[in-house]
Image (cartoon, rainbow, N blue to C red; front, side, top):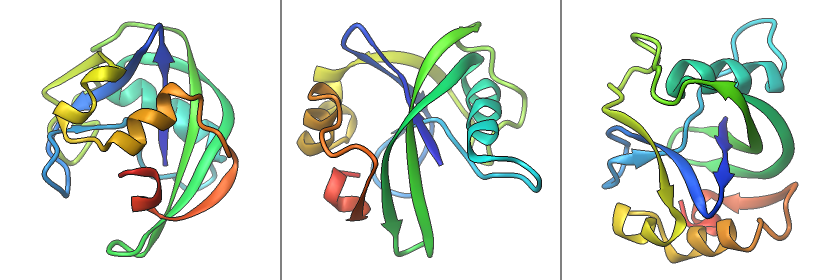
Length: 138
């Protein structure tokens, strides 16, 4: 599960290695026993970014067929915290930095034009099943 926080044309990203060629990723993680999806996202966002969020609408569900998991992404809104106050060991891959990155910079960071357009357009079709992650450009 991941969260997308967009503020004034910038998106919150983690500088960390991914399974693919990108070295930037969306914050998020796994749901722990006894957690709801919203609770898990609030916890993961705080641990990985230092930002406290409120969970808003479901943006999309996608299949990550290589990992045999369903990828769930929510829109989130920053309500507090301290950007970059990453919890030690928050992820299995070290987090080098946490930044708000201009949407226009996404293709240069390895994200697709499709994903950049979805971010700019406010995720038309939000809340729907989108098939493979490649359908949203990830």
